[in-house]
View 1 (cartoon, rainbow, N blue to C red):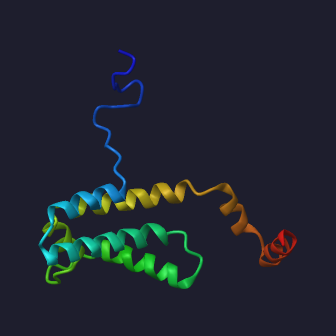
View 2: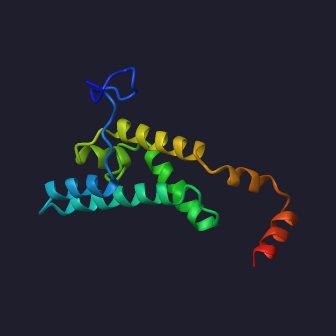
Length: 137
């Protein structure tokens, strides 16, 4: 009985299953063989999620722009545009609100879990950062 999920041990029955993006998109692709528009929508969604996740911590302006554009696409409801986030999700039989909430929760968790060194590094004056990088070389 120790391995049974319970509220006491923090493994509640209603906890979500973990699914890697590669597993998720592989399953979607399998259902869409032969439908070019659907495959394109999967590729658009996959690219947006990858940009959102990959460039969350981007230091360069291009990376930050890609991440910001992907997040803006998730957050915009534009029902008249065929490739809007909501239309892409609905075409792929996904709940756009659920996916949007999951992506924003991932972002929040990622930002909270940033290493302490990132926080202390951002507090250093620019001269100290330059000095530290010169000593590292």
